Image 1: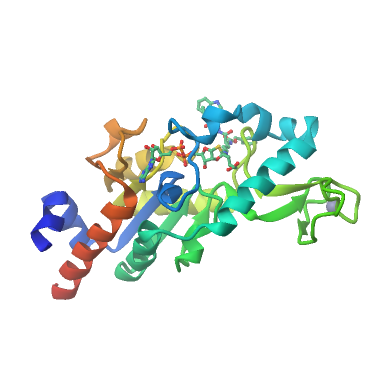
Image 2 (image 1 turned 180 degrees about the horizontal axis):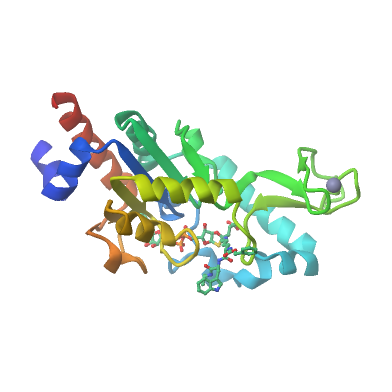
Length: 253
Ligand code: BJW
Ligand code: ZN
């Protein structure tokens, strides 16, 4: 088993993993695929069935709030029933293996926290939260029995607290993710197509600042050529094997 695991990983990756203190992992929808959460751009992904401009922009919400709200309610109902997978748990364990570890996620499904990760930066919000489009206050009420889009006490429509196309990312979170990417020694880009910016800048920033940058994905992402190394495979298998290897090396160091 030990030789099976070690053969997956290059000497360069194992060497930097053995000595690194500062590690950043960027995750995307692929990390949750093995939990049963649909990705966006895979052949069976959400953007193959729906047009992003009809559902994931503020203009789309204002044009048809009911349609957008119902789509998010549907996705919430899926996410509520799924569980974190071995990839999420491996990342929660990785946090305990490195002194300065940051998990930056584009995912809104909260599965990293449910798996026990604590040092998580959410770039695209969280589907478990809602807010008022007018006063921006968080909203924690329950859905009206009518099935209509809920409204805030101020009268404003309630929307999911996620980042749609054309909207700025939460400034502090983006700043923290950017700073961590500039400082890290090892950067893993896991389960993301690398097509959405500014998140897709982060692996490039890390590389420009001297980090060893690795992609874990069954298929090459848009950023694959900018990586030092690609590990082709599902994160639910690769990440636990990598963590096992790192744990052994760091315990014997
Ligand atoms: C596995 C696996 C397994 C499968 N294991 N892996 C032109 C050029 C550059 C940029 C732009 C441009 N035109 C417009 C822009 C900006 C735009 C953008 O990037 N567009 C590009 C698409 C062209 N970006 C924005 O608009 C952002 N905001 C912004 O720039 O603001 C500027 C601003 C400043 C000041 C004022 C105003 C504005 C916002 C982007 C928001 C993205 N939102 C979404 C929806 C979130 C809510 C929701 O879920 O409904 O975020 S879109 C969607 O894409 C979601 C994801 O987080 C994001 C990234 O997708 P991800 O995670 O990479 O998933 P996939 O499906 O793409 O890839 C899955 C991968 O997993 C694949 O590679 C598989 O192979 C792999 N995989 N199984 C491991 N088992
Ligand atoms: Zn309000």
